[in-house]
Image (cartoon, rainbow, N blue to C red; front, side, top):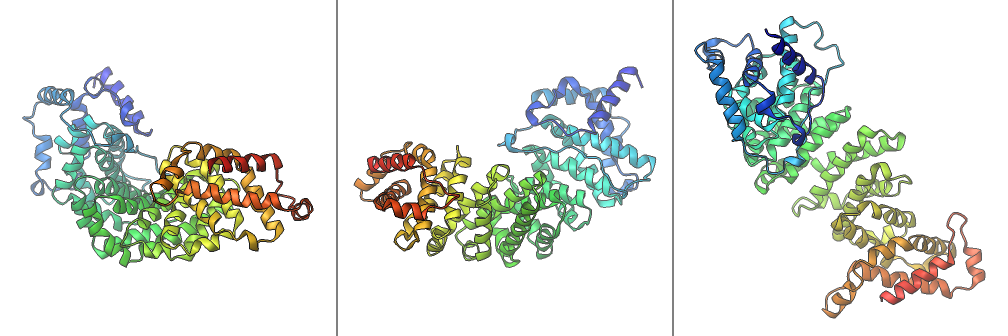
Length: 503
């Protein structure tokens, strides 16, 4: 091997130990990578215990008459022409790189296995590039990986094989080829029956990507068996590893958010297997962890679980179990009422949107929630985290309006009324910022004969509450004061006049 080849070998060995770059930062395939080197790596992944007569891939890869120079010339032309199509939303696709194992499961492997792992990790990284991925698929990488999945006894080899397929599945053309490769779909689904955590993580990632593609029906039909769906739910509910919970819940979310025909195949059996109950148990578990200790790696898990519940809550035929679950509502309240929300801000916003969805169907719950003023304060605190998300802001404001409408101020003790006014006055800036954006919305709706929007309803109700507060005797206000809820009279006056002018 020449010096330049040695340098190239060392360069790709170092790549194997680092996560791959985002798609837009991937290196230029045509000028950086020798296609013959990629093919040599694929050859080294061919399992030694595959019988020659069983598969054509060996002759396809190792036939002596195939000239390396011809491969190089044809491959460079292919890569420069960019025949592989870009995935429709590639900026949202997360490619993963190989991670070293820190267990004893695969230590003491043969020298051949070590070489396989080294070459496999390089290909795993290279598959993050769309051009490389298309070239690899044309040179039988899928057939080679299928052979490994079928015969390998090494969980590390299985993990790397799945990781490569996962990065290939980030690109549209290779993903289509994965779905059309004989026996590969079934082999990938069967990986869910393994007990190795890294392998399960990669299997869930592959299936999530494939389920969201245009070939989703193929994967939905392969996953719909009760044994497989039960296994996915079991993994999600019983996994202790945060990454595995994230990947398995991500697969459930993909099933809910995929095309209608995909959801139609998977949702009925998943609901029959008590999907909603599993999700709420997972939420309860993560909330327990959140209260014990703030662990950053669990924040994504919490957010995914909430997004999955939200996706289920907006499906007309399957949402009833969500709306009627009292444990879920209590968990959402606890999250929204957290004193320090910054680290889990996204989850708090999703929780508030979920509450809005619930109240749209179960309106009777608003009366009970209106008695909890700390919950109302929590909603106001969540609102700034939804900046940039108009739909989320609208949902949160609709909940605030409903709760204020349901507040029985005439039945409140003076001290509770003091707390309510303190909360409203302390949110003066937020209320002004929100309502000044569309100052005429409520008037336009009123003249058109439709119902007032939530902002107008809230403004009218705040005005009524402050009017009553201002009419109270100063002595009563003094007696009613609560130490932790100071009222700034200037803020009360400003909010009062703002509401009056807006009305």
